[in-house]
Image (cartoon, rainbow, N blue to C red; front, side, top):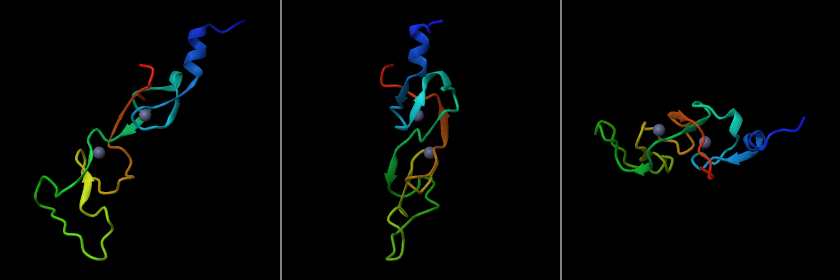
Length: 89
Ligand SMILES: [Zn+2]
Ligand SMILES: [Zn+2]
């Protein structure tokens, strides 16, 4: 039995516009995409409690962080999840 065209589309691998990871549309659910809803910024934290001055031994990201969750590592796993976003949508 032949697959319907819709099913073929759902099994095609796409690349997520948000996290740049490949995904299969049929397996895309609200926990599939992990991302930071805000930008990686370079300034002091909003709460003013943590103020960073880069010292000679500090890693270059010490004064930078994600505006959404305060993660200081640019490679920190996303703090929000949602469905992947395809370029076709
Ligand atoms: Zn975040
Ligand atoms: Zn994604």
